[in-house]
Length: 227
Image 1 (cartoon, rainbow, N blue to C red):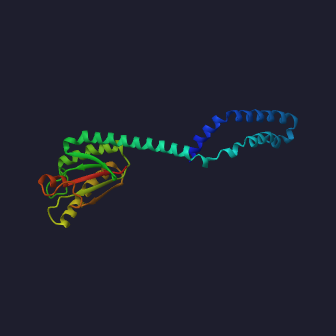
Image 2 (tube, rainbow, N blue to C red):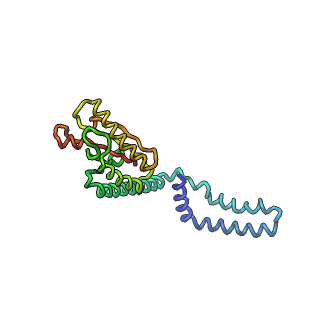
Image 3 (cartoon, one colour):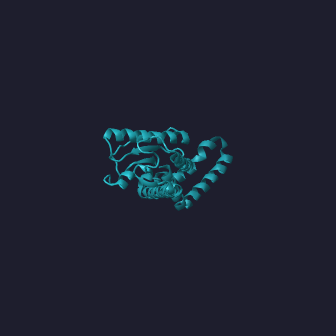
């Protein structure tokens, strides 16, 4: 609200500069004349002419900010649009940077209502395992460096996903343990505790589980950077 008032006040002062110039002249005149003629009454008399002029121009009452809804809404809309555009461009640039750095490692990047989604296929873990293989640690190290540079303090959620092979309990446990493994590494390397994890089991497939390629895509870990 202060921003809108300042904007409107600036426009108002420009429009009524002549009135304010008169007020200034009267005030200076009052200052010198009253000071020399009646110094004992200076504090009270010096403000009298200026206050009369201010009232005559109705300056105080003319600043009705409640009548400036159009200006306020326009300024707010423009500011919000600029901020959203800036965030959008920043996110797009970071996505391209991550994809370029990790594309050869089978990493894809996407965005949705959850935030920026960095999706690892089943390259991180060997079959039926939840400990990272050697290559996976190198890939995570690359990602950590980018997160430190771009989003050092953002909240991060790690989600583990599986295909539909096996029981629900098995898939749920495996997805949780894999997500926990990745979250622990990120938490230690980023140096903050705003990293959480959750296992989704087979409940959120992104491809058809009836094919081998589809099941491979569904076996994944997603690192979500909250925006």
